[in-house]
Length: 259
Image (tube, rainbow, N blue to C red; front, side, top):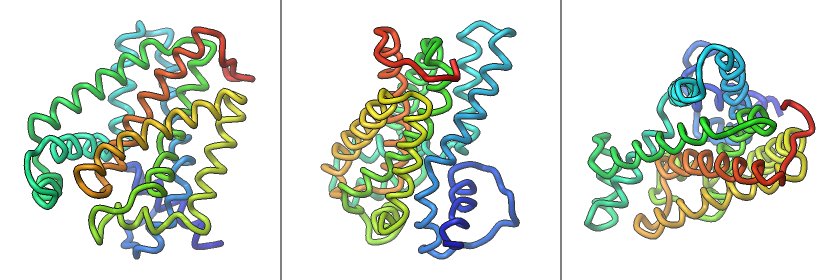
């Protein structure tokens, strides 16, 4: 149990640039167990987003506020998931064998497909943050980053790793017996508390979005990599916000509090 609790610090240090302890080297088992805490880290990112939103709502119009929040999301994740978006797009767009695609993804250079994917994702995120309105805005800002990071669970469950080593391999082997159920329990509890039954529907939407992206990547890569996990998180986050905007406009979701 102590090792699993220590995984919360590992998750924070991996998913954000924050360092609460002296930099440490972790073995693969400790690193993998941290997966269970990803939604909790997402709630922390959502809380920072909500606090900035409340601070800026009386100072700036919606468009520049959203631009600042897009930058904040990128900074709080250390650009980790956006890098996954770019690398995944480059790997999927490359015309070549599987090994060559994986090589392109590991080079670290961003090609035209990666740049285009980044622009589209950032623009879509900005539009979502501009359009997300009360009464669902506050709950959505807080909840959706957590749901997006939970999507690592269904992706790791459904798709095999593309490489015998690396982050994709670690995630695939980390789900049981604790990390996957723990992450799911945190995500489900947060969804119910913040959005009621509609929160569970939003969790499902985020999961489906991530799985569809991972399925497309797995088809050409014969599996998923750490970059695909990062891309799935970003796509799930945008799609979940869009789904919440559409549902709230039709009165299908109503936060119990935090309006």
